[in-house]
Length: 144
Image (cartoon, rainbow, N blue to C red):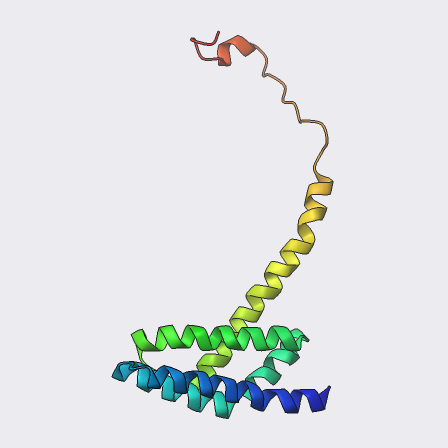
């Protein structure tokens, strides 16, 4: 498993760098160039560290990669609007960890959902009328 991890992380960084190189060459504006350069630099420097952090947190290599890719996609949009953060690696780590937490919470909620349905009563719950109140008094005059 360790060998697979070492072989894959450089590939992820290369894929991201290649993608941002394509963004730069497609006639993008100056801000896109700045963002693409920052993301390519962060990808080559931080990918292995972020993926290993996410694997420790989730125990799932595929989920870790997916969350990091989501963080890169969010950075591409967010950094064009709000500029590149002072520490892009920390920003990417935080966004990827938050994404992983969201995915894990959603999965846990989906696992619990069938149990909630199974515990619901099969027969409808009936409420008793308070003393002195008839069912007709609660009905709309057009219905009664």
